Length: 66
Image (tube, rainbow, N blue to C red; front, side):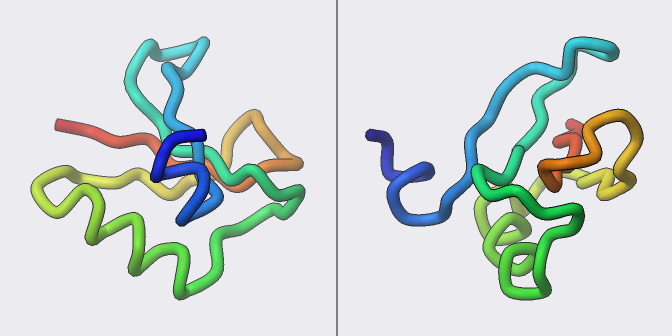
């Protein structure tokens, strides 16, 4: 298991719709906690993060934008 999954509980994948990277919670929840958001911002300090939940309703996710 990678450090990201093991230590943070996230996976990174490409969005099926817009083909940009997104970070997805491995837990069933609709929103990231404040602590999750802080960790994600630390992992991607130079990227814009779009937190809007559009199509995936059972796993919190965010698009990582260059």
